[in-house]
Each structure stands twice: as C-alpha cells, then as structure tokens.
Image 1 (spheres, rainbow, N blue to C red):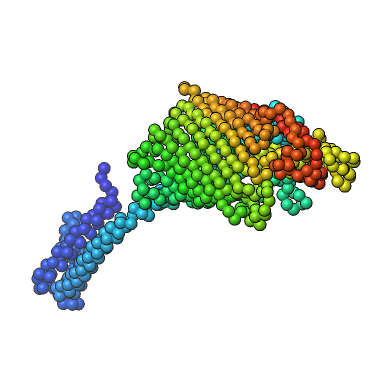
Image 2 (cartoon, rainbow, N blue to C red):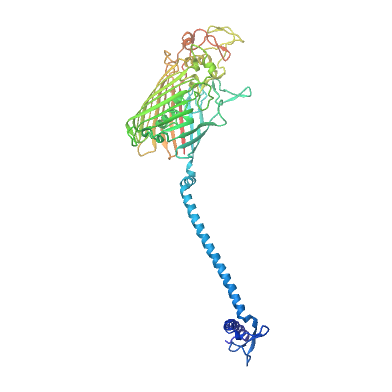
Length: 596
C-alpha cells in the first residue's frame, strides 16, 4: 500500500529537521575553523534543501527551497569561544561542588561509624531492657470455690477462709462459696528485685450498729458472726512486698546463695511452706493456720536454701522474720513485735523441694494485739494481753507420687475463743442474748428481776459462752496437738487420694477440757489439667468427750467471775454449768481450684 502524500510529508519533514540540525552543527564547526566564511554582522547566511533527496545546500538551485536563514554574527568564532569558556566554567564549578559533596559524605560516614560504635557500647543495657520489657511483668490468678453440705452443724473454727455456717440445729445447711480469689501481679525491674501485689476478694461480714459503725451479725436463734470489716483497706491486700534475691551472691556466701530478703506484707515462715508440703490448701487449712496463725503478717523476713557442700544439693532451708503482732487484716496496736523462725533439714539432701526425708522445726513468740496502756495493767490472769507461743515439729517424707507428714504442736495462749468460734459462734459471744432469761426468783445463786435478768444455764448458750471464754482466754492456757497428713497419686490416672487428721487440746491445763476435738478430712482430688483441679471430701470435727458440766468453783481458776454480767444478764454464781461439749460437725465438700 502506497503511503498518502500527507504521511510522506510528515516523514520527510522529520528527516529534514534531523538533517538540518546536523548541517547546522557542521557549519558551526567549519566556521569556527575558517573565519573567512563569516560575513559582516548585518548579513544573513542561507541554507537550501532538496525535498526529494533531503540534501542541504548553501546555494539556490533546481528543486531547492529556502530552508533557514542564520545571522552571520552567530557564526563568529570569538562568540563561540566565549560560550565554550562559559560552559567550561560551569562544568568546573559543578565538578568542584561534587568534590565538596563527596568530602562531606566521607565526614558524615566517619561520624556515623563513631556514633554506631557508641550506641553499640550502651545497647546491651537499654536494648535488653526494652526488648525484654514484656518479660518483666507476670499476672496470675488463684481461685478457690466450693459447694458444701452439712449433715450436722455446730460451733467450730473456719474450714476455709471466711467460710461460716449457721451453727447448731441447722442441719442440712448448704452453700456455694468462693473462699479465695486472688489477682497476683509481679514486676521484675531487674534480676535482683521482685515486687508483688496481691489483692484479695473476700466475703465481708458486718452490719451497721447504730447506723455508723460495722457491727456483728446475728444468724438464726443461737448463732452470730463477728464483723471482719475493721482494719481492712478498700480492698483487702493479701500480699504486697519488695523482695531482694542476691544478698548472699553479692556477699559471696556460697552455702546460702539463692536466699531472699522480703519487706512488706509477706507470708510467714510456716503456713505457706506447709501449704505447699500438704498440697491441698484449696480443700482445708493446715494445722496452725486452722487454729490461729494467719498466713500473712507485715514485717521483714529472710528465707532460702542451705547448700553447705556446694553444688546444687540442698541439705536445709530456713525462714526467719520479725512482724507486727497483728495479721494482714488487722490494725497494729502493740508496741511490741513477734518473731518467727523455721528450719527444715534434709539429711540425705534434695534435688527438688521437699524431696526425701525432712525434719522441720518452727518457733513463734509474740504478744496479743493490745495497746500498751492496756497490756501493762497488772492482773493475775492477763487474758488476751498475755504472751503467745507457737511451736511445731514435723517429720515428713516426699516422693514423686506420694508424701506423708506427722506434726506435733505446742502453744501458750495461742487458741482464743475468737479462734474457736471463727466459723460459727454462739450469739452471746458477739452481743446477742440466746435462751430465755430469768426475770423473777433466784437461779444459780442469783436473785433475778426485770432490771437484772439472769442467764438460765439450761437455756441458750450464755453461761456456756462465759465458761468457754474462761477456759480459753485466761492468759495461762496451754495447747497440745498432733497431726498427720498425706497423699498418694494413683499411677496412670488423674486421681490423688489425700487426707489430714488433727487431734487438739485447746487447754490441757483443764483436767477434762470439754472443747478437746478431733478433726479429720478425707477425699479424692482430680487433676483436670495443669490449671484446674477438683476434689470431693468429707470434713468433720468431733468433740470426743461425753457431755459434761463444770462447777463454777472450778471455772474460777481460769478467769470466770461468778455472778458477773454478760450482755447485761447475770452469770451463774453457784452450782455447775452444763452442756459444755458442743455438737459434732459433719460435712461434704466439693472443692475446685483454678491457678494460673
């Protein structure tokens, strides 16, 4: 197909323009070499093109057309040389700037290298802290829950923290409970320090007395609970302490490396340690914790392993501290402090905690949480103002699948009426009169009237409450007890039978103490996964003496005041106080523990 004339012309014009540009360039070169070609400043230099051949001519001719007119002044060699010099100056200036820029870049590279070296020197400190910042925190939780059913109810200490029941004549009582709910916050600012904060969600007990202050609570006809609101901060703080882990490492005492120093609201040396040894704290309290010793006090403590022969084998571990006489949910009133110490010896060594045969001794000496102006009052029977002693001696053996322990307990003034009745108490203990008062005539050596009513020893628990307080709160009581506990994991299953038995005399200075009891727990635990386990168990308190009375004259030796008043009513002045042995307690628990 022959291209159209217009297309041909467009193509020819493109060729012409290209050739013209080339011709002009050649002329400029020739003119600079041959000045004779230059015309006067006012003349024009003409170029012609042949459209057919696209050739450029300097003379007109056949089929040649005028292509361009160039002023002769543009072809003067001096002007070209000036332009070349100007161009060369521009190139030289640009080259100089490029050299300066290269030198500056070299300087910056050297500076950057020095800065990188400085950063590399400080990097391990700050970069490690930033990179591992998420590892400096740990948040966990611990929840104990249960369902419990009582076939027989009575007065008793708490089976678990803040667990109560409505007392005698309330058989078949049941309840769903959350006895412990912790959020554990740990912060590890450095390898040497730990900060722990553990708030405790707990069940409060208390009612408005007179509309302003928290008071005790009456339950049913014969039972009451004491308020636990006094001394608690907005939420109850279970643990809050600062711990240092490297004291003996810094002092290069190899035998004590791994020991810690803690300050704040901290576990005491016995309770938390024994809870771990037992392994079933979510089911029931350990012996001294059940009787009176709180798990947590405010103070300063040290604990850790003892490795006298070097290496990783532990032959002993210890815990020692000085604390308030109040526990973690009470105000401190005393100007004195208490001390506690525990030493566990493993004669054959251990490579993991509690492994093998162990012998443990614990000692605690303190005072009642009483203000100085009260504790200094001279009395024969100081009651709650007296000193407090607790001693425990344990022989224990732990294997991978089983463990067993025996314990002997001894104390002075270490089990008060408040401890005895922490789970369920007679209403008279907390200000509520039980039974029918006598308002006329005489009874138990007292003359009674409406203005001065008398307790009837055979009605309610007023006279019995006074007798029990006399036996427990006289400042000269002596406690003796023995305990056995253990567990056995059934191989190939998730089941672990466990149990605890406790025999205890609240005051063995009494010829026959009506409050002597035997407590036993037996059950089976099921490990659902690493965080969750369940248990079904039977928990029982047996007051094993036959029902008995004690003469008023005998009770006088222990702080009972004949004819005195309790809750506005006269107590027996003569005769005996009957029904001093409480009813037994029998219950079934379904327990659950979630620990993360």
